[in-house]
Length: 115
Length: 114
Image 1: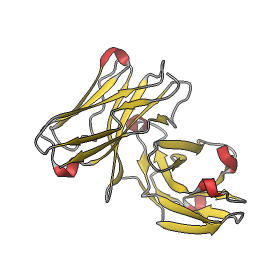
Image 2: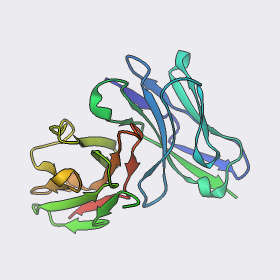
Image 3: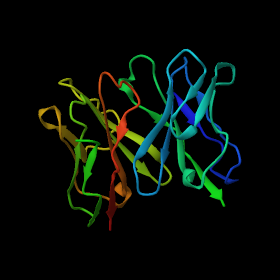
Image 4: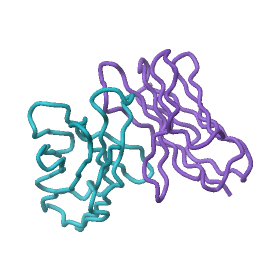
């Protein structure tokens, strides 16, 4: 069965510092890959997604993610974090075929931004 | 509408009561999903509707849970005889053929069973 691991439960960074959130997946084949963000009391907002092609994906709010097949990773990055980026971030996967487009989520990484 | 709308935003119910949670997807979106977000379990898939096809109910945790989608639009998730372990945030999402995977989520319904 597919699984998604986000090894960091909490991360604290200073405003203006760079950010990298880790995501590893276990799957039979390269799945679709996603990053979502959830602010308190809100639903999940899609930051970016990877289906195929260029392994560096650009998303909204200045985020990017890099797919590395050899490491089964899809880490999320931002060069300079803003205080408004404080939220919970979820990595997710979905099968390329079949599976009904169901997403399997990681357990999330809570980001705190220090001013 | 402009986004996925869920109601109520908060629901407190007594153990053993039935509850209905509503989801109004983005107009024209053919696919609709329900997920549950709870402490200790993370985000779990519950059920998936695609057009007129039979729904994928493989994520429903027990026969107390059911969902329907009327007219290919609004969906209702029903939990019968609620238990304390049903307390969670229930999230609805929808997507279109064009949008493909990577759907739009609503803000969720926070259910508390006391």
